Length: 240
Image (cartoon, rainbow, N blue to C red; front, side, top):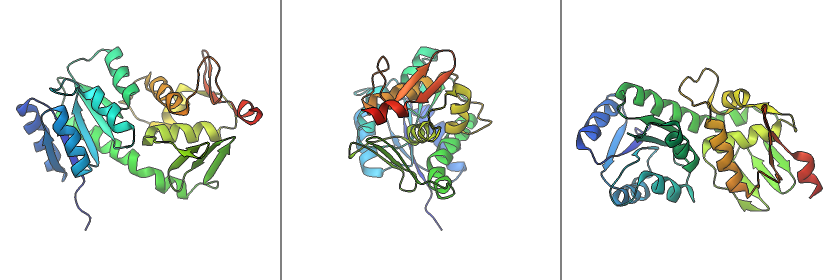
């Protein structure tokens, strides 16, 4: 029997932590807690949680800073909570590296659903990769290995989240075709996902470009086709 996945819940409001813990433990998760940014970073290093539920407004170190720090060398899935519920705030969270974003006040039952969906996406990659005919995708100095869930740029490993990895692989295998935001949403998040923001793909593209060192004004890898979507510029990569 496999051990229960560990979920780290980070919030400085004890009532919210207790509520979230109760709902997650009912679903069989093991829950650990942190009430500020510094203890959250320590808990991530010590516990290696399967997923982090993270408040944006925290003492010591805020949620966005935690995500950026973790994303330098880790792809642990993260669901962000915040009383700041504007679209701009959500996009900021997604661009920083969050896998999902839930504004406060929130339904704890909905949070559990989102946690499960993010975990499913993070663990489904290796199963899906085994069924694909071409496990390794190459374009110029970029190599994506689906089976190993790794990506390298000029021989240097890229630290990608599950969503970023899916996005990159989808763009690579499109063979230069333009993909709409809707097509990319279905490929990255899964068809029928109703919780995803319309601009989530834009945030993911921005994160991916940053990690690839790509300039959107002079794209070497990911090109924006205005009013349509995005494409991988294979010809440009091969020519450089």
